[in-house]
Image 1: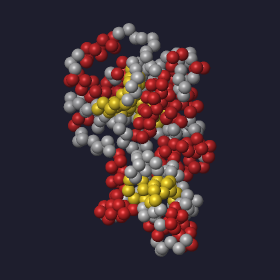
Image 2: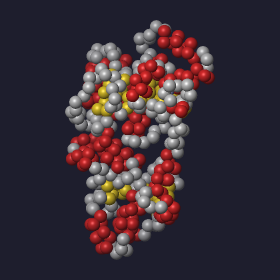
Image 3: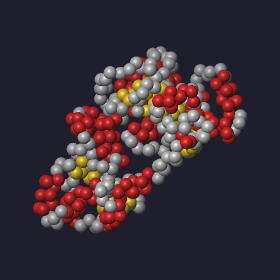
Length: 404
Ligand SMILES: [Zn+2]
C-alpha cells in the first residue's frame, strides 16, 4: 500500500491539534488530537511512499515506535485514506492509460469521497468499464443520459429508439444538430462513443435488437413519450421484471421532470406497483390513462431543455451510484421536479400486495435513507476482526464527524 490522505478532501486546522478533512457536512471529518510531528507527517502520506519507507521517515522524525502504522490504520478506518497503487489488476491497467485517467480524474476524486477503503475508488472506476447499460429512448433526456454514462466511464452504453432525429431532439451533450434526419439509434450511439473517455472494449456482443437480454447491469427507460413518463406501462418492463434486470425511469412530462423509481425486481416497487397504487387511491386513474394513451399522438411534446438536462444528470447520477454498488435514494421512489419552483420531491412507489413482481412479499428493504449514519457505523466496525466496542472507542477518541 502507498497511503495517500484523500486529496479530494481539503484540509484545514480547526486549532493547533485538530485537523479537519473536507468542507461539506456530507464528507467532512475531523481528526484530533494531532501533535505537531504527526501533523507534519501527514504531508508524507501523498501516495509516493510505501509503508516501509514511511516507517523510516517516522523514525527520522522521532515518532514513537508503531506510530506510523497506528496512524495509517486509524486514517484508513476513518475513510480518509486512499492507496495510490491499490484497487486490483483492473485498476492498475486503468492507471496505465494516462489519457483516459486524465479525462476521469475529477470522477475518480469524487468517487474517493464515497468509497471508504484505500484503493476502492479506482477499483470502482475500473469496474465501470466492464458494465453494460442499455438506455431506451434517445430524446432530449435519453441521449444526454447515455452520453453522460459513457463519459463517466461505463464501458458499454447501448441506446435504443425508433425513427429519425427531429430538430427538437437536439440537445447539448446529446444529439447534435448535424444528426437531424439520421436514425435516432445510430446518432445516439455515435454521441455515446464521442463521449467515452476510451475506445469501446471489443467483445462478442448480441444483436442490439434483443431487448433486455440478460447481462445488462441496468436498463434505463427514458421515453420521449410524455404519457410513458407519467404513467409507465408495466408491460414495457415485464421482461425486465421477469429477468430480474434492475431498471430506472427518467423523463419529462409537461413541465415536470421525473427520475425514478429505480426498480430492483422483486425488492422495490415497479411500474405495475405504481399503477396499482394509483388506482387504489384514485379509481378513475385507469380511465384517464386509457384516454391519454388513445388520444392522437402529439408531434412535439413539452420538454424544457434545462429540465430535460437536469433529469438526465440526476438519473445518470442515480444510475452510477447504483452501478458503483451504493444504494441511491431512487429505489422505490420517484423524484419529481416542476418548473418554475424547481424543488425536488420524493414520491414513494410502495410495493403493491397484488403486484406479481412480489416486492410486497419481501421483507422490508434495508433503510438506506440515512447514509451518514451507516457511514459512521461502518467506520466503527472496521476491521471486521476487531470487536465493535473497542473499534468504536478507538475511533471516538480520534476522529468524529465535523460540525460544519
Ligand atoms: Zn410490482
